[in-house]
Every structure is written in structure tokens, then in C-alpha cells.
Image 1 (cartoon, each protein chain N blue to C red):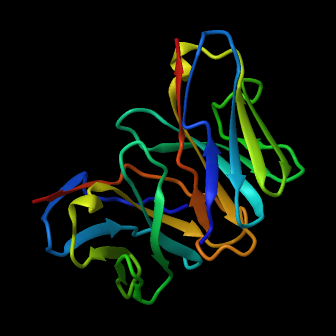
Image 2: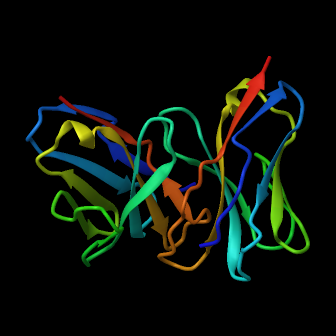
Length: 116
Length: 111
């Protein structure tokens, strides 16, 4: 089946630094990738939608200059949290939609970001 | 995307069937019903989806009412590993359509 690899699974960074999270589709081409954020005991909140080769579309209230998304190839999208602050600490999850995926949307395993 | 409503939590005994309801009374004709589950600190896992007809796969069965305003996910023989948050989502199957997650149902399978 379709597999999405997300890396790293956990990261701790200092306040003010930037962190890059990678999302790769391993056995299919992902035309569209989605980035979600999830706070403890809450549901997933969509942050942005990225399409290969074009600019990401951000949800209302999500700062595009803070959460940089790059979808340079059909198998890789990256989310960079710039100038991270403790309130950015969260669980970040990507999902990918493949051209030939039978399951529509496949999710990565998530990245736990802690900003200290 | 149509809004879905699910109970906040449910309990089920191990080995019994778990029946998880979902209301989606405003679902449109081209929206599918998707079910995902999320085990603690992991990404959501696809379970099943359907449009009108009942669906079954190796994980679960999906029963959709004739008017499509509600559905039930059935885990036929729940195990402890099925303890998770289950999300029912109405969404289109067209390319680029996003999935909007509600609060889901916390299913706890008890020994």
C-alpha cells in the first residue's frame, strides 16, 4: 500500500531557531500534500495544502512566513518552522494524495516538535 | 465539506463488535464518508470509505444509511490494539480535496 515517511519523529529545538520537517511518499507520486498540526487532546487542524511545483495554500490564521512549505518534487514536501517559539510546540503531521493511490490520503507518522 | 458529529467516547469489550456511529446530515451527493483512526502519538490510519453502498475490508465494515445522513463503522471483533480515536470525515474524492477532521470518538477496548 501507499507509504508516507515523515522525518524526524521527534525534535527539540531552542527558541528562535528553525526546524525542517520532511514528508516523503515512498512508493507513489504525491500530487498534493497536506500539513496538519495537532495540540494535545485536540483534533488535527489543517495548516496548508501544497501542490508539486506551485506555492502552498495556507488556511486562515496560519502565517505563511513562519511555516514555510516547499513541494519541490512529486515525492517530497518540507515544512520549515522558522524562528520557533514555545507556542509552536505541537505534533505536526503530513498527508499525501497519490495519483495512483487506492486510499486517497495516506498520513505520515507525525513529528513531535518541542521548542524550549 | 459537510460537518460530521460523533460521540465523544465509547467503550467496548475485547472480542465484541464495536459499532461507531456518525451523523453527516448535510453531506452532499459527491462526498464520500471516510473513516480514519489515530492511535496515540501516531499519524491517522485509513480504515475504509464509501459513497452509498456498504463497504467491507479486512479491517472493518461501513454501513451507510439509504439517505446517507448517517453511517456506522463496525469493527467485528475488537482487540485492545483497536483502542484509538476514530474520525468520520465527509470529503470529496477529487484530486486536491482536503479532509477536515472533527473531534472523533475515543474508543476504548477493555479486556
